Length: 246
Image (tube, rainbow, N blue to C red):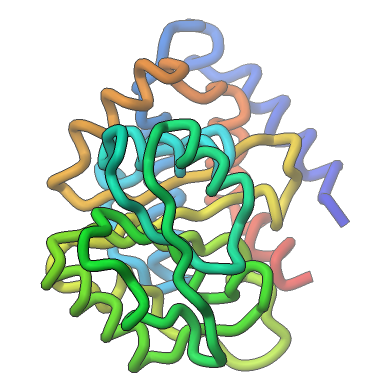
């Protein structure tokens, strides 16, 4: 169901743009047009409060998670994730030298009481837990944020497929109800468009913005500008929203 005709149109327009003609290096965080389009989209669709300055474009969720981990973790640091959870994330964290601890999941989502007190970061998929599919209850979400504040920890919210719903609206993201700036929100276009595009994003609190920009720069300087320009147009002209509804 990928909209090939509409995508070819915005790619052709991107190739004719002034930015592509200049062919220069881009901001590591991404093009301004795409960051602004993403901020507007998630504000409407997910009630995520973000300015373009808060958004960083990445080459897929895996790179976004890698950047977050590099900014927040050092060798030997304890990190918690759901058990069962996303195996590529576990392998990534182990490769960075972190000590990975699994926390069980029940019908309300991650069991907050099982989180180790020394964990610096916890990775969660609250909207649609991977792979069990449960949604984290609102009370559990509030408990997780309270734990993060007590433990001086960061919560990384991987909202990988909240667009796929057949009835009702999802619960508010952790980022929306976070009042202390402890949540990094990660989203992707791999599930809604194509994994081959390798386009994802994260919304970082101001306290992590500078470090995350530097980590993105040393990782790959910036994500391909043509794809960013095309996606920004695709979102702004309403084609992305129409594609999601279809």
